[in-house]
Amino acid sequence: MTEYVTVRAPGEGEIIINKSRFICAAWPCATEEEALGILRSEKERTRDASHHCWAYILGANMGQMRYSDDGEPGGTAGLPIIETMKARQVTNCLVIITRYFGGILLGAGGLTRAYRQSCKTALDAAGIVRMIPSLVLCCTVSYALADRVRQCLAALPVRVLDTQWGENVRLMYAVRLSDDAGAKEKLTQLCGGKAVFEKIREEMTAWEETGQ
Image (cartoon, rainbow, N blue to C red; front, side, top):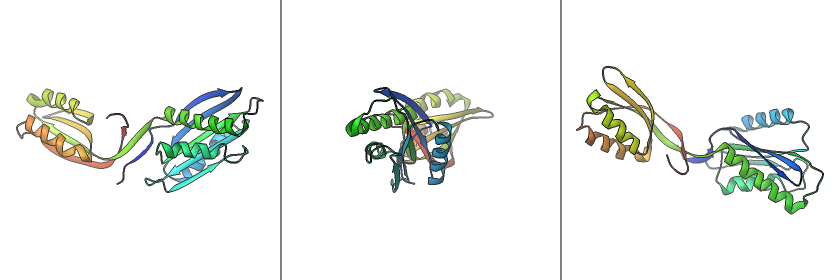
């Protein structure tokens, strides 16, 4: 599994430039079929718009790219969209900028800036995350240790997913593969070796770029 940057969820924003309205939207997507399906749906939903300019990048290595100016002057829409995505290293993502023309021509430079700004707005609305190889683990401890373990987990670079109270306390958490050994060592030391760890699954997990 290779880590990569993408968007957390579908997101949408809007900007107005010289009376033209730009609807700025981004979606996470894994395949070309999925991206083109979203594009068809959005074109139908906003079929009264002047332009639907778009770009997508797919694959953890950003190996598949495609974009369209959809009637705007060549190189002023799709290209600045995809260049903005590349600059932020975003993949497995579709960006669609829907423009409602406001009657004032922006010129080639103005259009390029408008679509670059629109792409930034779309990506910010969808939320940038890094998909990182991670583990979902279960840490089982006694009730006597539960509060201390929960406090320790809160201070570690992990994400607590669930707590189950039964004969013992089972704490489910996600951790990056690179952080797993260090987190286990601290929990083991805290519990005097009495914590039992169970690997639930290994997966790609979204982590915020600026923190956990």
